[in-house]
Image 1 (cartoon, protein in one colour):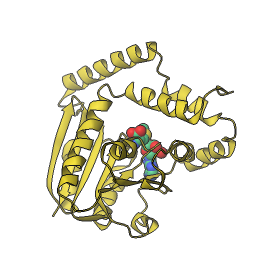
Image 2: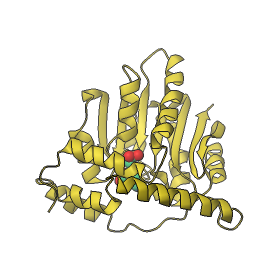
Image 3: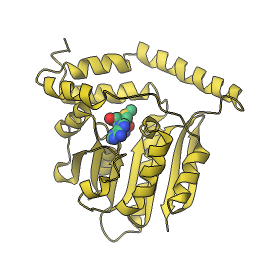
Image 4: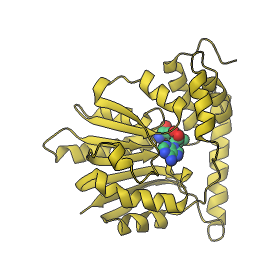
Length: 257
Ligand SMILES: C[S@@+](CC[C@H](N)C(=O)[O-])C[C@H]1O[C@@H](n2cnc3c(N)ncnc32)[C@H](O)[C@@H]1O
């Protein structure tokens, strides 16, 4: 039985706390992405339009909309519970639209009605994709972006266990100890959060659909920073770099011609 007193806003707050347990400097990472987008906005003659890929409860889009007046965002995800949470906690009305779609689906640009964006962003999500799906997503991104459009992806891109074993062990150790500490201070574990979310009163159908959506979920092969940069370059992003790093937590940047 879920906590009957948990409102969608409390569930969202618990999500952020739970995610921060995995990412010690999540706020810093988000702030870095927002700063890049604010800079991009300063060169535009219209309010920036942002696509948040695998948005979950629209975590990143929400920060962008709060920071950049007039900005609009479309968040895409396929998890029924997180989509519902995003919709029920939307503070931005029509400035934030939430779309139920699979970001690996090659028809995503059509599902978004052919809309184009100034920037596509993603956080803590693309490691869920197989390398082939990631390359395919990058190949389709230019169809959803303006010329000169920007892509930002914040995620754990792990060290190579063969050639960077010491760094890998250090990163894992730092992450584990932060997580234990953070949970001792009250953050929910991933499993506890999902237990609470899927037993929200009135959310039973979303919980059922969630099981169907992820029925064929499987572990994915992890890829490196170099892989992301090469895949972006092959897709037409002419300026690429890793613009932020704290051990294996990184932000990948790409700009189209
Ligand atoms: C750890 S959550 C991160 C969510 C959000 N970006 C955040 O930072 O709070 C990973 C998200 O990726 C989404 N996701 C994974 N694979 C996806 C796919 N193929 N299409 C759409 N969303 C996907 C999941 O549903 C989940 O919301």
